[in-house]
Length: 303
Image 1: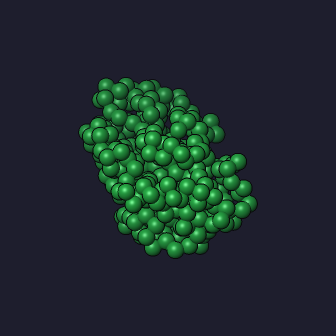
Image 2 (image 1 turned 90 degrees about the horizontal axis):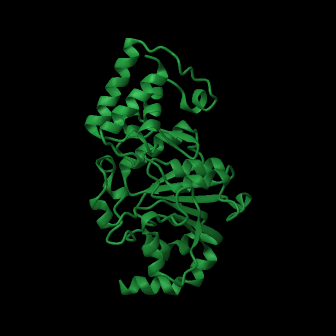
Image 3 (image 1 turned 135 degrees about the horizontal axis):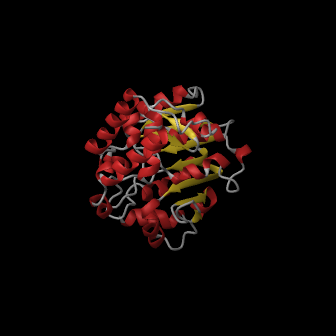
């Protein structure tokens, strides 16, 4: 059996197993290719992208056994492939990942490589805060997109910060990316030119329907309360105190986006379009947050 044939066979097995995706791929065929190539030692960042794969390569018995072993794990454990191979990709960069942190798939990754143009002037970004950093992929990608910036990456989970530290070391960014163990803005006293956040925003109702693969990830990275806004609302109220005068806040609100707009119809959220949705990531300037501060504070007082 050759490489191309094995990928097709594995794809069929994954489809028959009725698995769920969304941790780097969104279908069985793509996941099969990622799995087989990784198990056989291909470099997805070089050989695959450069088109240097010999799809007609004959596979040895050892090759076939190794691939079949990984397929068995994926089907029986129903764990995200990213956890099984300890590899994930975000904004064009490769990262280490394991069960201590959520598998990155934030829509923010579509905007970071272009440095959030035209919403910010990259040359003016000298400080960035990444709230809910998880494995550190957003913080590291921002550090690479804004080479003159220092980045603070914070998270409530010490376990996730251990994964982030590993990734920061891989990229040699220890001097520019620092970690904070804190809940929200607790322990954050500086002001930043830019704040980015992929917070927990899955509502209680949606949590009930999460596929098994998603339940292998840390629950705190998902759970956003009744309407998905438990983290987002206090963050909006407090962020103005942590932005520089002309700073900008970028947040992925995901499935809580409509609830957020319904809660604050007077606030002009700017929604950044993405490949799959036009209303999942928003930005607000420090000026807008100051302008609507009374609205946000009033809501906090009522609740």
